[in-house]
Length: 460
Image (cartoon, rainbow, N blue to C red; front, side, top):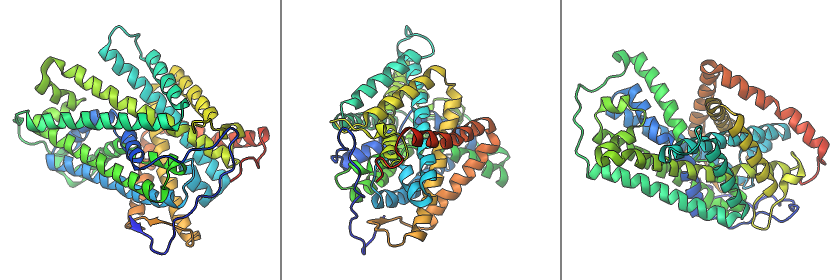
């Protein structure tokens, strides 16, 4: 990041008091890094390396794809760090959209952000149920009972307050990182190098067009696996020093995750023949089988379970703060601006849990995934758009840090997000139409909330 020598550290806009307390200001860099790492490193890294290898078929290109994905996420982190440090308020992307585009856009962005979190949370919880059944086959099929228990358990944990949530996030992220690094170390230091049984794979037909097409598909999978690095922005108001700790959390988290992802792929390329890696749906499981024999399946299932549990903790902390931000700023029902003595928006947590539980019971796994990904990329697009508009309209806004490489770094993320949204609309029209319908519901939801509550309540 580029420090802004002319700017003094801005004071947050004074928030209106919540009905039963207020947010605590106790978070530091440790939590921020844990949130960024915990929000990114899920079960996706167990599966995605095989998809990327199948598309690219070359070890240097595979590593290059993961490096490019990390740089893309880092460009996003640079941009969002500027926004978060300049506008350190609870709510996430809605804060930036409201400042740049007005109340209606701010509500729509908050609405899709919250729905995306609920859908993603349901998807991860169902995944946990499936992993748990892999360890305990006697569990009911489908995994929904375990998913609901996991959801309710973490909701009760967050109900205890911010200190409990922060501590659990740091512990889970540390355990996750240690587990991945231990497996990487075993692959690099213990396992013998794999001998490929054939010539190195090449990109389909070897033509530049085929290579470019394969690269696009590979990068889509890679960038999706990096998603979640932005998690600290939802807690911007709860940092003791948001102007410094928030940017460091975002950038440091992306750098740490990029390092782990690159090491995972280096380890896989050492242990597995390239053609075996490309054909595998769970290459880390295949690598573990070479190291640990019959215990490999349980080991990788446990690692996937740990990764997913940490992700649930992150998401269920973030989502209520979106509703809190909307309500505290007068865009949603005032009851959701209520904060308990522990610093948790408890009414918002209850609604988030109820909606997610409904999605677990009624939602389709692939539908939840497709809609969530569309929403997440759309949020990146609106965030970078807000950055451009605020730089133009409010050059006097105090910015403790400025996005490194602006406007090029921000433009890379903006164009990449736009390209992803267009390709999703063309290639996955069903999920895209469902996502568009959910976005359209933001208008009646906003009108209803204004009728049920005073439009001036909690305005900040």
